[in-house]
Image (tube, rainbow, N blue to C red):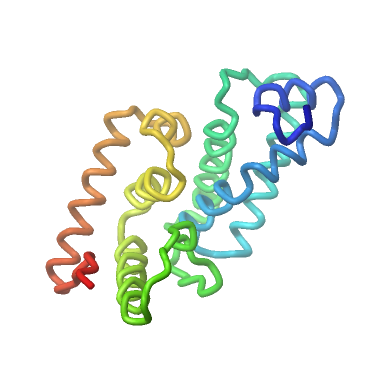
Length: 196
């Protein structure tokens, strides 16, 4: 069996046993989801790249020390590390994240738009732009849960594990994110449905 066919648990064990190439497979497997999460929270590509690197430095050192407690939840564990590094960064700065806009990054690129006519694609592009703006206006905790749930396809248990809160808190943040987005849509007369 080739390494890319192994599950995370087996790759971690092989890496711990000395097979250095296994960490590359794990990074390749999860880098898009982890980087997307970090980028959506910090909204600064250079900072996101630094935190992504620091995350995997910490992952590697923990695995090499043999202190990783595997419960078959490698990705939530890594997201938790990145979450803690983000918090540490902002604690050091003693300020909240600044909206950067990050024109290069598009979290909505993970959404697959089916091919349609030009008008259909324009309407969908407008909806995506409106959604992106509303998500950026959400408080960080709400934005984080929304991104993890809808764009990274994580369960509320995984979100709770990754962010260090209870499942009820994660559910509450999601509920408030949706309420806030609905209010913003109503106040700005934005339609989030394509009727074409």
